[in-house]
Amino acid sequence: MATRWGICSAGKISHDFSVALRTLDPQHHQIVAVAARDLQHAEDFAKRHNIPRAYGSYDELAKDPDIDIVYIGTLQINHLGTGKLFMTHKKGVLIEKPLAMNLREVQELIAVAQDNSMFLMEAVWTRFFPLSCELRRLLSQSEVGDVQIVRAEIGSPLTHVPRCVEKKLGGGALLVVGIYSLNFVFMVFNGEKPESIQATGHCLDTGVDGTTVLVLKFSRNRLAVCTCSVTSNLACDAVISGTKGTIKIPQKMWCPTTLVVNGTETEFPLPEPDMPLNYINSVGLRYEAEEVRSCLLNGLKESPVMPWAHSKLVAETVDEARRQMGVAYDQDNTQ
Image (cartoon, rainbow, N blue to C red; front, top):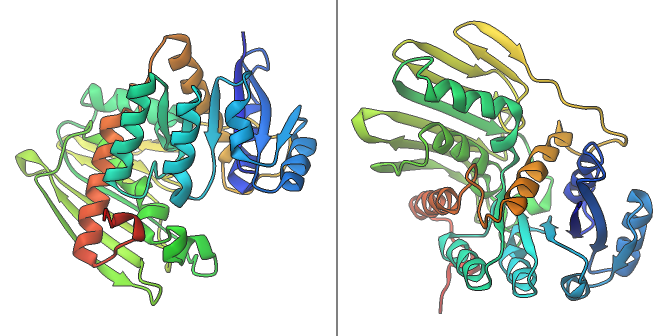
């Protein structure tokens, strides 16, 4: 029986996710309905992707009895509200990164998932690429010895994109792109909490961070350096340095297809999409969808690849970095 998907929002990332789903077996994945806050947008999206139902509100999608899981592609400022809506209506949710605006909201989403016994996963697609699976295997076998230093950076000039720089939209380098660097580091260190976090950088006139550099110190003097920026072009690569060699992702660290292990390069090609995409390699969103189906079939409420503990750890780290940078959002006010 196919996993029945609902799509929440009719924006660019939802388009790419829908295209990615069509690269999978239709007997395993079917999009049942899409919802947007504007019915016309939902209907246009449904027509483009051959989706049977279109709704002009998220409430209508939540009440659809024929949906197993909802992909939430809204702005991060809406993740808490939409996630709670669908889970309280007994729908599992796959929520685009970041899972929520801060640790408090992440914990609230997890509590709702537990109270309603529903599946919840942060859509950090990097975790599920075939390359990432191979990387975890290599690390588990100590291919490069004991890891000593990890460096991961991602950055691009995005100041012309409101959602990337406006505080009211949840903008800022850490939340928009830094999530990828941090997730890479915590994947390498298997969810270990750092002993210390040091953050520096600069903020934009909008009150969000434009560029942030994080230095994380782990046990046994292991270090990680994460750089993220919405103002500058960075290499967007990652390097793991161990006592016996190095592992590199030379480009597109956030959607990886090239792995270099001690100088030997391996490619992990992606399938061809049937429509143009908005983001590089986003047909790779298919892999997180496969993980969702596997978890649902096995009765799991969280993914062993992207567990809730990792989402909490990333959110806690971002909160501390923002505190040091002096970046605060309305969602941080608990009064």
